[in-house]
Length: 398
Image 1 (tube, rainbow, N blue to C red):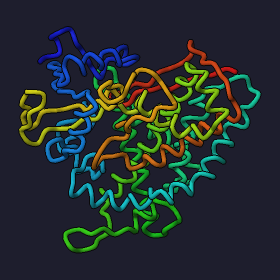
Image 2 (image 1 turned 45 degrees about the vertical axis):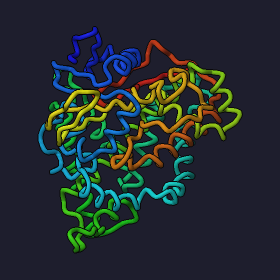
Image 3 (image 1 turned 30 degrees about the horizontal axis):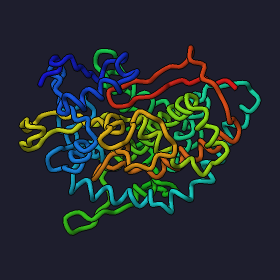
Image 4 (image 1 turned 180 degrees about the horizontal axis):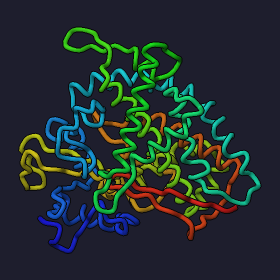
């Protein structure tokens, strides 16, 4: 069924539609669970069960040809980034980096994350208001992942600017534009030099771990090659910064819209972990994941041919009434089944535990200092790409 039939239209590049895509996603779930956009040449799955099933079926729905619509087509696996690899190659490399994100290692970061929160938030107490993202939310995940990787303090701002540049969105070409490509090249150049340093002089950081690590490959052990190292480092730097910042933007806006639940969280911080999960379900920071069909598959009575582009709408899946009762209601006490905002299966987000920790500690420290606030709606600025949804600026007053 084409995008013009039944009047249902969803375009991941439409900025206005992205302001509130949930009504369209609801119609897609109900009327076109296998949605077709002829103009842009993709299919989309919007129901919770379908997103789960496709995410787990990596033999059919592949990441090798890209996971962002405007980048999909060619073989992206040559970049050696986990996002663009399928098992078994994906599993070998993921196991290595997984050692750096074990629950024990992540838990050990809590006090450092709390100290970083205090460093940014304490000077703002009594200020009357500030930009929650520009003055805090964007900096926190950048600082955390920079320290984990081992980015020197005097280079962190430069690295953050490169990361932000890789997400630059052009109105006509999406993320494929000179600004984004130049920033990506700059990030990889910086990463290559840093990894070369770590190979020669290891330090106590993750870049050194990667530079010195060995993996099992075809019955022999070897160190990671240059492309694998660059892929790992670049992915950790960018993914560890972008999605957590979007989560915090949604946290401050959604809680402002639900002051009674915000008051509960301020009075009972033990409820915050559940609130983080509900925020991730309610407004997924990265609601669209692309896959390419490798072998013929039937979905909702339609046969998809190899090479077909399929978008998995994790943001829609989180509002599917087939999985979540009253899904458009934000409820920090919700105990339904898990959301899929961190993905499912082989490509489940490697940094999910760290993102949860950062989200929890950030909300604890925010609510301890600022139990109430209002949004300066006239000066809010949204951020939009075909795969990331959230805010760039969220000024708050109290």
